[in-house]
Length: 229
Image 1 (cartoon, rainbow, N blue to C red):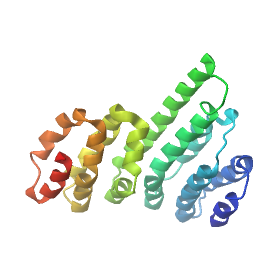
Image 2: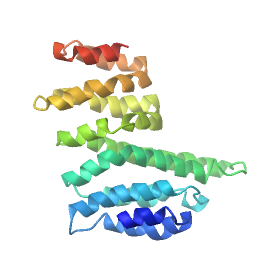
Image 3: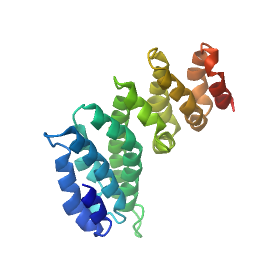
Image 4: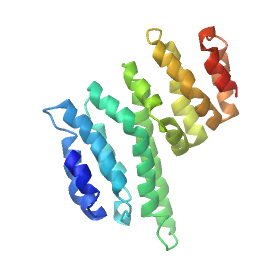
């Protein structure tokens, strides 16, 4: 897979989409090793990110092919951590593919194409929302910490979903981190990441956050200062 990543940097977009991606998706179901499956996920994202020109016929490649492959991933901790590291990149790349298939073409979109675009985006955002909800409620706090601590992850996801869904999906799940009494690092991670999320959502975040912050242990005052700013 490392060789595939290096090779793909010199392949055409068509070759990556038609030859490399199907093989990597096949490796997502490798039954012999969870390390292979975890690495296949990262390799898949890396290779997808190399594609610059997406044919209009591939506008639904994520909802029709990539996401069904990811849904079949097992629940091994290494695989879940890999997904947590890459979920924001997946969302960003899927949006770029969709825009490249429609908006970046010089001709004006027909009404049918506009409908296809919005339908596909709804399908993709629903899939990303499901993956994200699963990761944010994972039974292992390591997965949740990896998700919120990956540089640029939450900012990318906020931009992808917009303020409304960022509130409903991200913030509503993030506050559950405070319920974990056994993992102080997870609670600290909450206070480190929530200021940026709350700033993106705006005043709508206040009714959800203020009652919780009033109950916060003074130990976390330094993080509250960042939130108040």
